[in-house]
Image (cartoon, rainbow over all chains, first blue to last red):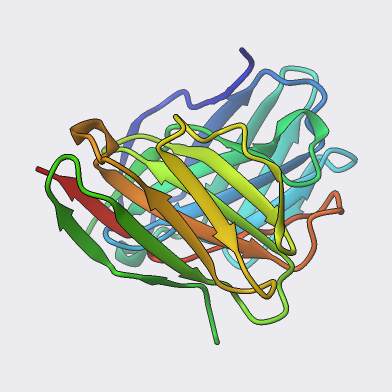
Length: 113
Length: 116
């Protein structure tokens, strides 16, 4: 079946560097995407979302890019801080569903001081 | 409340016992979701509630799993005759409305279930 997947399961960066976390999705009918951050022992925390009618959306220190042509999503974190260390999940609204999210397996981001 | 609340935070049980996991969503959120997260894995959708009804139960792994929601608020996920493969973190989320293309789900901290 169609699913959301991640290119890199782990990413290690130096404090202050920019981080890029990638995600591939295969369901072309999905039209809404979300990035979540999950710290150890906690539930996923909403970071940023984007609809399919947009290519780019910026938040505080984070930017999400959507390339519908190659079905690729990325999360960019500027000036990465130790507090950014966590597992990051991308999720899509499964085939355009108005309630069901399909999650990728996650990327572990480690920020070295 | 301020966020989604789940209880207990940890539950250890013996194989064959029944367990109940509770979720208290954000006040005013009409949609509620249950997910299961196994070690090092993504989130697996279990069930979705809109109000007190469950239009989609497709993710429940077996008939040992059931969930209910009363008063459009608190939900309980029940696992009967637990098996070791049921060990996982069970996450609950809620959203303001589900019938929208923009559906931010807010998650609780989860219940870590260990079946011995």
